[in-house]
Image: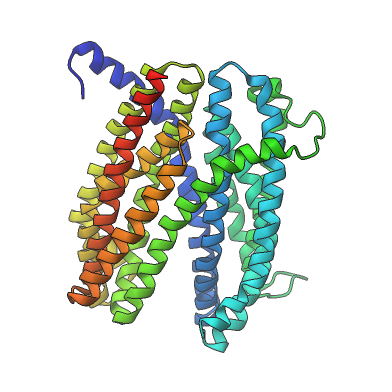
Length: 452
């Protein structure tokens, strides 16, 4: 990657900048991810029926969240390119249009979540679980608009290379969820015990408070004062919203397809029995947590690439990618070693069942295999978003995840009798194909930009 001391010094300098951007994002992502963990832990204390309802409801809610995240991801590259081009006066107007898009997306997700209990009927979920799950989904649906508005606000801040608020507000929301969730779940003073619905309402309330606090911060902070973000009201401008959708829809589809791949894999593994399902869930939970670090690097790379493109500094585009790759190789090496040497020990935190813990530890070794391709595909996707190159990457991810990854998993896991490890090998194959295609797509796109 480097050929001289000066290049090595440049790489270290670029990597430090990317690391400072990435770490608050990664830790903020972990805090957001931990909200569902808090819901699950509280639900478990209430009883097994509530635990099952919240677990099932959270899985459906996560699919809606993926759509929201993908669509609003149009904000960081748009903002970072404007900032890099010295056109900061255009950032406020485009963000106000992003808020209108967030309102529309949030309302659509609210309607979907209120209708989603019908899915439980089609899935033939046991009626005893179906009722509290439906209550949880209808309650949490009120938070959908706040979720979309929060991501629009958060991605504005990240697009301007100011990532600390992501961590601060993420941790604050996580801490707040514990007392609010407990009060509405078990009851407190005049507040009645609402069970699973209480956790849904608590999560929705916390999401609204998180967005309102973030919006107030954007309005008052010196970092954004010159943007005049909330200085005046603007009606929707459909041309600007269309530009955001052109970027956001392919990203939303790509992220949804990646997330739904793991849901589909879990459903197939469900045919193999309780031990395989439980082990898969444990290994996936650990692998998902470790993925937050390269995801943070990828989001930081989106911002750095976008800023460099806006400034037409194409060598800086290449260095941003090199720095991201350097960091990802380090983080994924650490993750792979942890999964190989500590996987069985970590599994024992989740269960006392020797069969489940043993299989989960084995699956974590398979997860170690795809740490590098998973990190590289996330990084390459983030860098391509910084270039506003989203359509072809969408097709690449759909092909790699579903046509290759899931097909290979079904073949190895079911047809060849490898069971859950076969599905994880399929995931490794799919992620490897995505990593190779996205990585080369990025460099080809940069070369094309330089020739233009």
